[in-house]
Image (cartoon, rainbow, N blue to C red; front, side):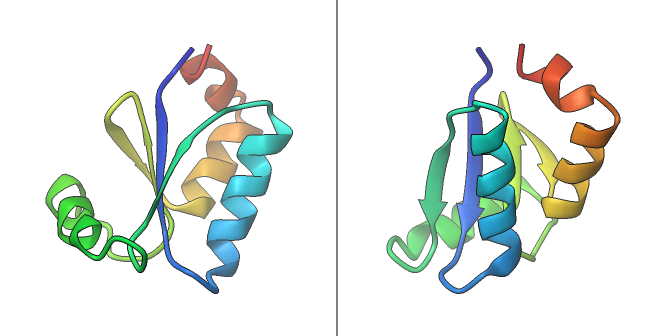
Length: 83
């Protein structure tokens, strides 16, 4: 099973959609809330050029935000990458 991480912030609609999509596919993930743990914002920025929320990682590789996650799912790539 793949290791999935998602950096989120409170009140982020795209974050909620991304988590809902992952849950609907039966995928577990580690959520990193940058408001609860502010040091995680600089960690996220060091790992990716993405500055919007959410930022999703699969097995340590950045896949981008919700739109990127949704596209991977629609193309069947999310299932392949998380198998």
